[in-house]
Image 1 (spheres, helix red, strand yellow):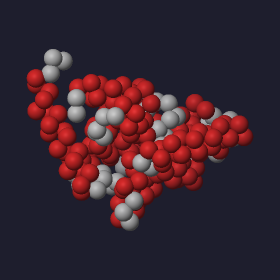
Image 2 (cartoon, rainbow, N blue to C red):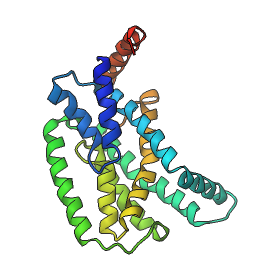
Image 3 (cartoon, rainbow, N blue to C red):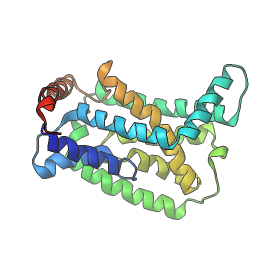
Length: 235
C-alpha cells in the first residue's frame, strides 16, 4: 500500500461515514475504480477508528449522560439516560449475532463484492427515500422504547454487508418508526459507537466476525509492510 492510497481511503472514510451512504462500500469501490490493490478489512476497520473518535467528540455530552445513566443503574436508579444505555447495548446484539452467522456459514466472500455494494447502495437509498416520505416526525429520543431500539438494532445488522450504510439503514428504520430526523440521526450515531468500537477491537482479539483467516493474514501482512515503509515517507 502506498501513502497516497492511505490518504485517499482516509478522506473517503471521513466524508462517507457521516452521510447516509455506505462508508465500507465506498472503501471497496476506491481500489476498484483506481485500480489499486484491495487494502483489506484490517485497514478499513482502522480508518473507522478515526471516525469513532469524531463521533465521541461531537456527541460527548450525550455519551457522558448515557455513561452516568448506566452507572446509576448499578445503584438501582433508573433514569431516561440509563434506559437509553440499556437500549444501545441490547440493540447491538443483532449485529454481533448476524456477523457470527455470516462467518459460520461461509458468507464472508460476499463482503467485498462490488456488485453487492452497487445493488445495496441503490436499494437502501430508495428505501430511505420512502421512509422519509411516509414516516411521521412525531417521536423524540426520549420516547425510545426497547422494541423500537431492537428494530433499529436489527436494521444495523444489515450494515455488515457493504453497500448497506450503517447510519443510513438505522436512520431509515427510525424514520419508519416515526422518529424525527435529528433524533433518528442522533440515535443512529450513538448506536454506532459500540459497533465501531467492537469492530476496531476485533483485529486485536479474535478477528472480525466477517473476516476469514486468509483475509486476516492478508490484512495483517499489508499493515506490516505499511509499518516498514512509513518511516521512510516524506510525510
